[in-house]
Structures are given as C-alpha cells and as structure tokens.
Length: 300
Image 1 (tube, rainbow, N blue to C red):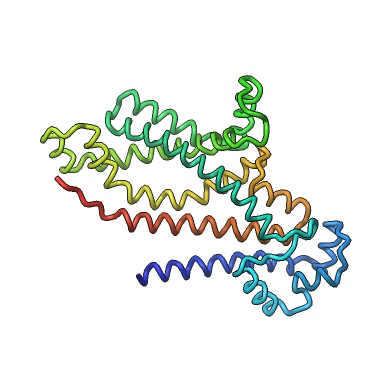
Image 2 (tube, helix red, strand yellow):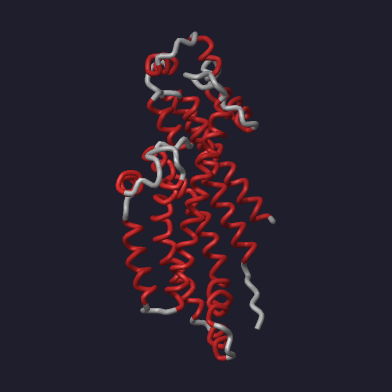
C-alpha cells in the first residue's frame, strides 16, 4: 500500500513540476512576456485582461500557486486566439488522440501476439524468420517516412481511404512500428519461459501444444509484458502526435503544433499538461497491471 501511495505522490509531483516549468516559460521570455504574447499572436485583447489571465500582475510563486489550484480542477483559462475554454478544446482533441492510440494498440497487439507466439512455438521455423525480418524492418521505419508511404498506398495507388480525416491509416502507421518491437519481445519472453521445467513436464503429460504455449509460456511472461506496455504508452502517444500532423487527424498532437505556431500559450500549457499526465498514467497503469497479474499461479 505504501509503495503505491509513494508512486502516486511521485507521479503527482512530476506532473505539477511539468506544469510549473511550462508556466515558467512564459515568465522566462525576454522583456515583458505580455508584450511578446501580443506581438507574436496578433491578438486584439486588451493588455490588462491578458495580464490578469496570465497572473502577470502577481509575483511568480503566488501566481503559480493560483494556477495550480485552477489546473487541479481542470481550469486552464481561455484560448488566447479563440477565447474558448482551453479545457474543453483539449479534452475533445485528447479523446481523438486516445481513440487513435487505442486502435493502434489493438491492431499492434493482435499482430504481435499472433506472430510472437507462433515464432516462440517453433524456433528457427518460418514464423520465427518472419518475426525477425518483420520486427527489424517495422521497428526501423521512421513515422515521418512511413506515414506518406501509407497515404500513397491506400489513398492513391489503392484508393481505399481518404487522404485525411480517417482513423485507419494513422492507426496502421502507429501499429506497424509498435507491432514490430512487440512481436520480437513476446517471442523472446515466451521462449524463455517455455524452457522451464513446467513446460517440459506439461508436454510429457501430453498437454496440447497450444495450451503449453499459452499457460506455461505466455502467462508467466504476461506480468513483465504488461509493465513494459505501460511504459511504452507514452511513446505511443508521442508517435500519435507526429502521425496526427501527417494525416491531418484532429487530435492533441496537431492541436499542440497549431498552438505553438499560433503562439497560443494558454492552449500549449493545457495540451502539455494533459499529454504529460496521460504518459505518467500509462506508466502507473502498467505497474498496477504487473502487480495484479504477478505472481501467476500455475495449476498442474
């Protein structure tokens, strides 16, 4: 219990530190931050209103405490350009990013489980060779290159999907790189557990091979795989941000890029805070899954 509480407090501290650092960048701008914001964004909002919104009329630490209180209840202020509540815009765009990431995760896990388990079942077989080649190529393909190739293939050469606004092409882009790494990881982990005495004994008793693979190979390795999956969730989100820009997907990553280019710093703060929180929660969820699964009790 104490370990879980300490981990939760650590994640909260990191998240608050990220928010403080992001808000501090506005104060760190050379000259008057307010003048810089007005000049770069071209906004016509009266300076005094902006000064109050950014808490520039208060000392830094007093303003930071006030901002943290607002952020804790989901209040990130108003967009500098559209004057919409930042929290509403970020929440809507984050749901799109989450949908894209989850679909990519489902596709990637399906491919990697089928390929990885098949390769572990027959070392040096055809599936093992395919897993090695596919894993090496898919993991090495950069998203900025792979995205246009998928657009060319499925929107021009084989016009199945439209160029933008469809979730399938960006999900396939994310899933390819993800499944390449995971197929090889699952193969190695399952192969190691199959070398134990439990798997050998099960085979000697005539247990079907598919059951040996799942029960004595995959199940003992699932705890470590779940923990690693949680740590990789942040990487999946980061890949989604790049993919969203390539495929014109209306998610959190494209919002962040748009806000940076338009100098909408309030929106940048909100999007960065939510993205960091999602990455940290993914790591925490992976640890919880590992603690829930492990130890795996095997019955004979």
